[in-house]
Length: 229
Image 1: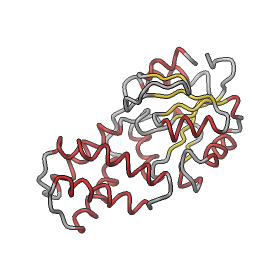
Image 2 (image 1 turned 180 degrees about the vertical axis):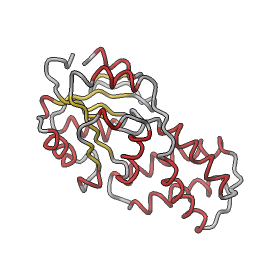
Image 3 (image 1 turned 30 degrees about the vertical axis):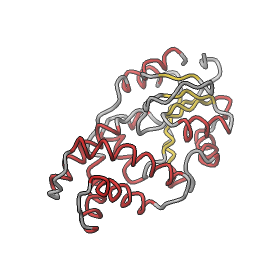
């Protein structure tokens, strides 16, 4: 559908290519045991996953800092679980979470297949709100770094998706235009609405069971990208 228009494909990373939930769960399994935090991992994750998304929304909207995000998402979960943990342990968990997260490298199904399919035909890039110090490590460890030309992150841009500045920076860095670019990501707000606002084509990868919408085409498996590009 976009084949005749697009020369550059921009991907989000977490929840779109890199299997954030699986890798995050493995990281928590390691660090909770390391610090002798005796909570049931499935119970912890059930509470953590939506809380993490909520705090990331606040972070995107510049309502909390990176430090507050890392502390508050854990503190809130332990409060919900009624499990007492010192601030010192929470701070250490937050540090170790970032330290170990990029050491796990599971990708979402069909990631490599789709990147192999796209690479000969398009220039591929990443636009991510993730922290600069670990996004590169994630891609290297998952053996997908070489598929991408430009890696644009929010710390580099000084703003986060959906702010138009980060998309304009990405287009300029890739030496392309919005008419010739498509954004593929999991966040309707950050990836899809943000990209559409500056004129990019969009494809919504529905990683969170979002309701149907008419904003753009929605896919549920990365292999479906082949139908559009």
